[in-house]
Structures are given as structure tokens and as C-alpha cells.
Amino acid sequence: MINNILRGFFYFVVLVLIQVLVLNNIHFLRVATPFLYLYFILKMPVGTSRTNVVFFSFLIGLVIDIFSNTPGMHAAACTFAGFIREPLIRLFMGKDLPEGIYPSYKTFGYGGFFRYTLLFVVIHHVTLFLIESLTFFDPLFLALRIGASVVTTILLICTIEAFNIESQKSGE
Amino acid sequence: MRKLLDFLVRKRHWFLFILLEVVSLMLVYQNNAYQRNIMFSSANVITGHIASVSGYVSSYLNLREINRELLERNGELEMELLELQDQLDMMRADTVTFSGFAPDSTEHFPYSFVMANVVNNSVTHLSNYITVNRGRKDGVEPDMGVVSERGVVGIVSTVSDHFAVVIPLLNPKFRLSCKVLGSSYFGTLSWNGRNARFANLDELPRHVEFEKGDTIVTSGYSAVFPAGIIVGKVVDFEKQHDDNFYSLEVELATDFQALNNVRIIKNYRQAEQKNIEQEAKRND
Image (tube, rainbow over all chains, first blue to last red):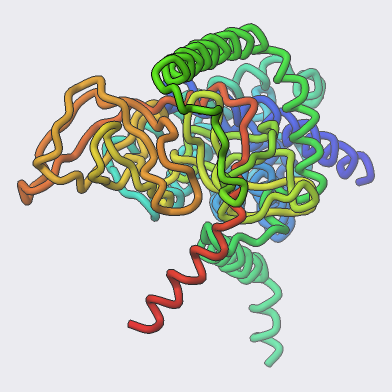
């Protein structure tokens, strides 16, 4: 239990710092910005109560908002993404997962983890960019931005997951 | 009753979800540029300090570029100085009665400025904001103009004790009154949301004469910027739908992606001008 809290806290701080100090400044070809902090929500243990997932998703979104001057946008998108995390896992992995394992290549399988990440990231990005474009609508450019950001985010998450020491151990 | 309670407890994540979504959306809608909640902007003390540390580190990364700009600016100023000196000499030689330049001591140039460093900046959102490390304690107030060595940057929107948030040209909420250098007709400059290098100048009357490459400067009507600060240059133009106005595509002089040092312009007569303008509107 206490281990889980420490682990979550560590992930939270590190991912927020990476996002705010480095990734928020990346605008590949002026359209793509990776949102790596989603990795925090993705990696919460299976079986965490949905209330907790929703709450912590909101929290990380809010912190990112505060740092990047986008009041409420990330918070709203993250809350939604956190809310549909559980059904997503059930959709891809069925109900018979042992409680308390962390989603990773080992526990979910390469295909499973990738599909889970892909759908999760797409849903989050679509929500985020739609909220952002409420003030300014331009469908083609919007689609381009969503597509490009999804690709960069997924690439980053999959790379980091491949090198995550914890994931390689957690299959035991 | 028990069933109802049971239901509520079982579905509590739904309620939390809805509650948090409502809170977030409220934040999105309430934080309009002019009444931004200081708590949630990066003018906040903690986020401001973290941002200024990272800004301090990254400011070393483009020193070469800044140095080049300063040299360029220095050269320009020197040229200007020479030109003025030349004119002065000519006047001295021309006029026998000329006895030196004596400015009227009651007439002051109403603008002065504060230097500031950019500590947080964005260029790819639809509504971009810039945070700088000068605030109320340095005499910065909302609605002051901000310029870089190259041209106009934006307007101060919120101020805390040591930081200020600037709405740059790259924000659809910001509209700037501009004119083509040399003519006196003005139009409105606004951003199209796509490219950080370009903005559009609309509502310029059709009989204004200009060419591609002409310089666009501030008109000075708003009391925020003095007249004649460079905004950019014309790269393309087209007629607007109603055919009476031009719409110009302007390449911005300021490079927002590499913004580092800015100057915040104070105009001590701004309040006076605003008051009298408001009074005139009220009397209407």
C-alpha cells in the first residue's frame, strides 16, 4: 500500500516536471506536442478504485494546467480519460486480470498494451483539442494537430515503457 | 431507501466524474483573458519561480543570437545618430541665428520602459500567453505594452508582485491598431491561429497605397504603444469580401519562438487618456 503511494508520487512529480520543463516547449513542425504525463494515469495499478483514478487524473491535469496557462483544459480531458480507463482495460483484457498489477508489455502483452495506450491517448487528445478549439474552430488543422500529437505521444510512451525497469520486474 | 443509498455508493465515481468535469469546464470558461484568476496562471509564485529557473538556464542557449541582434540594433542606432548629427550640423551651418536646440522643458515624452526576461512562453496553442519576471513591485500594471528588440510583443494582462502574464500577438483575443509606414490610415491586426510567424491586418481602406515588403507599424491610437513601433512587413494581400477593404498578410518582426528579453512600456498618461475616452462614451 505505502509502496504504491510512494510509487505514484514519484511518477507524478517526475512526469509533471518532464512535461512542464521539456515537452511543453516541443512543437514539432508547429503541430505536434507530446503529452507524456498521461503515462501516470496509464500506469496506475489495475483494480484501483474508479473514484481514485478519476480524482488523480483530475489532479495531474490541473497541475499541468497551472504550469502551462491553460485553465481547466487538461483537467477536463484527463478526468474524462481517467473515467474511461477501467472500461478500456476490461474491453481489451477481459475481467480476469489479477488485482494490483501494473499495466505493462509483460502483463498486458505487446499488442494489448499498445491497443490500450492508443485508444486511451486518442480519446484524451480528441477531448483536449476539442475543448481548446471551442474558442477558435478550424476542422482540418484541428485534425492534423490531433493526429500529429497522438503519434508523438504514443511513440514516447511506448519507448519509455520499453526501458522502464519496474515494468520488467513486475511480471513476476 | 437502502437500495438508493447502495446505488449512490456504488456509482460514486460517476458523481465524482461529473463534479470534476464541471469544475474543469468552469475554469475553462471563467478564465477569460481580462479577469484571469491569478491563482491558476503562471504568475503564481511557485510556478513562477520554477519557470524562472528553467528560463534562466535556457537563456544561455541562444546567447549568440541575442548578441547578433544587439549588434544589429546597435548599428542601426549608430546610423541614426550619425544622421541626426548630420542634420544638426547642416542646420548650424545654414542658419546664422540658430543658437542651439532648446527643448521646451514642460514637454515630456510620456513613455518610459522596464526591462524584463521571459520565463514562460508558448507559441502553438490557440491562445498563447507569455510570463515575464517583472511585476507590480517593479511598477508593471495591466494594459501596459510589451516590445522586444525587433518589434511589438503584446499587452500585460495580469500582474502579481514579481511576475506578469502578457497576452502576445499570437492570441486571437489581442487586436492591435496598425498602419502602413508612411500612410496614416489604420487597420486591425489579429492572429489567424496557425503560424507563429504571420498575422493578418484587416480593415485597411482600399485606397491606401502600399507594396509587398512595406513595413507595418503601430498607430499609437491606443495609448499602449507609442506610434511607429515596428510590427512586421507585408508579404501578401487580398481584397476582403465586401471589396472596400484590404486584408494583408503580415510577417511579424518579433520571433516569438526565440523570445528572451522584452521591454515593458509605461505611459504615465495612459490612465488620463482612458478616463477621458470613457467619459466621452458615457456622455454619448
